[in-house]
Amino acid sequence: MELGSTPPWWLTTRTCDLPSASATGFLEWAAFLFLSTCSQRLMLSAASAAFLVVVFCLAVHKVISRRREAARGHDLVNGNGADKPLLERGQPPRRVVRVGAGFVVALAASAILAGFYGVLLVLSLVARGGGDQQVIEAVFLALQFAAHLAAAALVAHEKRFRAAAHPLTLRLFWLASSALTALVAGAAVARLASGAAALSDDALAIAALVLSLPLPVLAISGATGITTAVAPSAEEEEADGKEKNVTPYAGASWLSRASWAWMNPLIQRGYRATLDLSDVPTLAPAHRPERMHELFVSHWPSSWARRDNNPVRHALFRCFWPLFLANASLALLRLTVMYVGPTLIQSFVSFTSSAERRPLWEGMRLVLALLAAKAMEAFCSHQYNFHCQKLGMQIRGALITALYRKGLRLSCSARQKHGLGMIVNYMAVDAQQLSDMMLQIHYLWLMPLQYYYAWLWQVDRVSLDFCCY
Image (cartoon, rainbow, N blue to C red; front, side, top):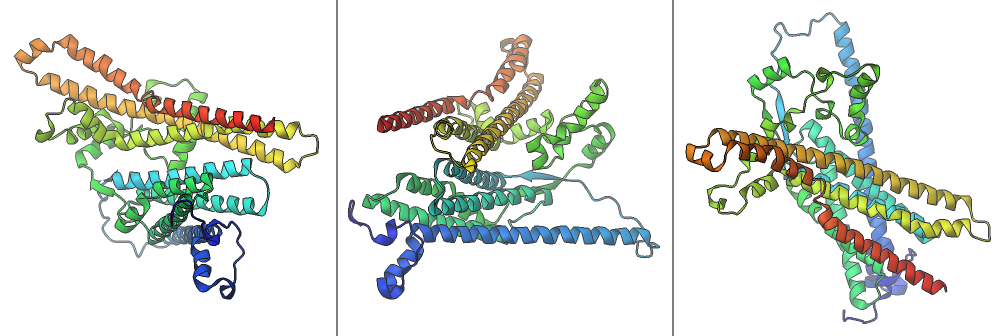
């Protein structure tokens, strides 16, 4: 297709009326089924709806199975115990769950796509009217948002059950979703090449394709990246004997961590009486300095990479890049929803100053959109601050432990160059400054992006005011 040439009708049409094959020809009829905007969105919506229905049915089946097992266990407890073994078996060894890059990428990709479609859904409900095309677009975005949010919930749930492979339903959804998204993006590129593109929709279709690139790889490989290992018995005994007051954050679900419900026991205890030092729970075993030091040492550059100017930076990046990427995603999502409020100002002014009576549901829609945007902004801000400080704490624990152990092994000549005061300065000042930097480091790239968004919004407002006058 040449640049600027007239595109075929099925590539630019926005209607969902299916023409007859005898009137248009079989090839154009097939092209309309697979390459028109309405047909592509219908196929994507059908795939998302089918995935949601299957997930709902599996969840209902799981709940019913658990209730039956609970009832069966209750019957066995009330029985005479004839079916019990004569000798009680020992407790199975405690297993530690570790997640790899595959789990982080799958969770991040699904969560980012859910946030992407969620923001588009809010913007479409706010900025557009109530025609049939707008309703169809809102339903399409709602299905995409719900499907990718369900996929993210499934991936997060896999850690609890230590799944080694993604379920077949999720892998089929990822394959179908990425293939159909590539088809939508291909049609958008064709419209761009012909000069008949709808810039916002086609650009967003290409952006959705970029965000969906990890999905087919994850679907084909099937591995979750979750591994289990047997914890040493000595550590288990020590944990049972000394560490009984462990923070509830260690075993909290993702919903409890998102809503801060894991802090309720400590808050209730502090409400009843003054807290003592023994009431404050200890860190989770996975976040303690000794564990962070083991992780730091395991990712230390090998002998061929020690010529690097900063091996500490290289080791820290290899240890904590998934957490750093998750914090960056929270910061980007917060920046996106931050501009929903300024975008709605003109809509509120138009609604309140309109001479004719406007429908009540339009005002309710604006209020709910603003409330959802501010709630998402507050959620992202709190989670971003917490996880950045947690990441800084982990980095500080790893560095202080490494510096202390390195100081114990210094030779006499090395102690003359690095005295006790310098080592204490490394542990007390430099490690703390690096920990505090985790909360501010993302502003290096967020600030220019924020200025660009503000400038783009201001240019759009000025052009709109100029057109009105």
